[in-house]
Length: 332
Image 1 (spheres, rainbow, N blue to C red):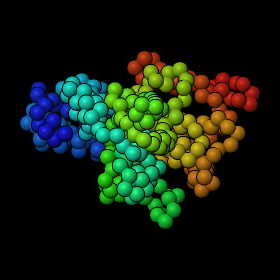
Image 2: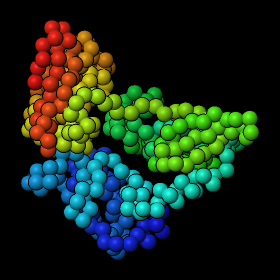
Image 3: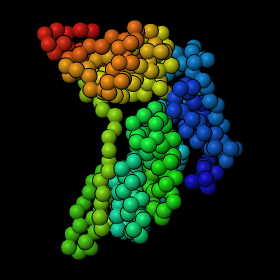
Image 4: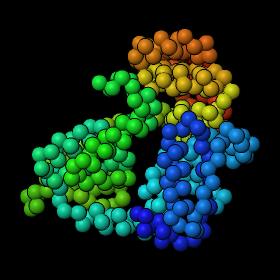
């Protein structure tokens, strides 16, 4: 990949808007800095959005990291070095597919590279089994979690630290890690070769005698009108990354599980007011989190609230509509 970066042709000037509390921003910034060091045709400027509010508003930035290339939008949110290079190099994906198609069959292929996938890979490799693990990003949803306080024997850690430790442990063994790839289809073995096939979104096919599925969890969508239209322009999924951009504003959090309550607690220290909407008659978050949330004066909790629509005027969102499931009344 380093050679691939050195050989990129053209002039690339990147600008990245970030927030200091964003845990995805450092990875993107360091990836672009690395590219600038390796290739004289690449330059990069990292900009703290909190310092240049006028620029943030002018460019309509409501989610970070927000990356611009030669003055035009390039991408928003988490991106790996591989993601960035693939987007720049038109032949990158083709070369990756070709390389994956040439891989020898695995005895065990694990689909999903979160904690469960890492654990399965280590147990397989310890028994001398040829093992591969494939996923969009190593660590999975753990990478999006700041404070982890329920991992037995570790009183408190952070998601990125845990993911780094998991990868280090996996690297102790002869395990093929296939990053930035998602499996789209599983094809059962036939009588001819007796190998299962895992077809990726990119078009590659990996063969293995055994497949272990460890795909875990991901962010849930609201699946309401306006959500996709206003994603990154008012609808966001990371309170740590994007919370500072909503300083002094009114914010709604959808969901009363651990993630929703933790988001509401974090945002309460940044924004003017938080309204938490929970579909069920009661919240599902741990009691200790609910107690903390209840102690905050800048948070309102609305139970039995069904989110109906995200509203806006085309450029950014302006509000939210929900239904009171007890009496059927509609509220904005």
